[in-house]
Image (cartoon, rainbow, N blue to C red; front, top):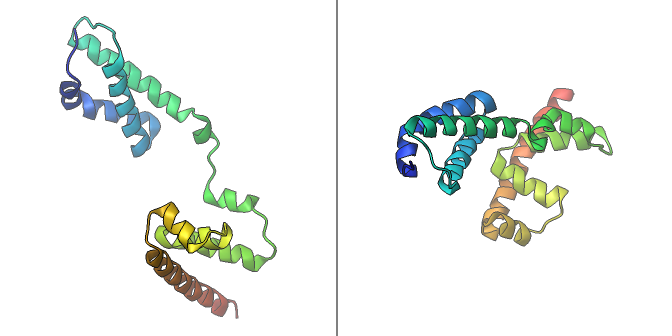
Length: 160
């Protein structure tokens, strides 16, 4: 017995997602696990006895894939941002403070500031990497610098 994938999605997607989320504790990973499970069903040549067999098979696969995701090397060895910063070496405390302030910026500014100042990419290269116009990259750099200036000024005034 085989059922169309669309029917299985309508019938079991929420249950499979709940199981995956329960194990992964992460929305993106749970969604990936459910998608991988449905792809595996679609590509398998296995014949199922009845709908209960299909359901049990899907649940078993989603559990196994979710466990594999949580045991993945990158997930086990992931560090918090604070731990990562501790491993970096800076020339002086000001450089470290600056880097921490860069990390506090909104993502769209943080990325261009990081690529420009820490990775030494040109505006044109950043535009190509991020699929933005050069003027947009320049605007983000300018706004990011302005936010950094404000943050560092406040920090400097608080130190006095």
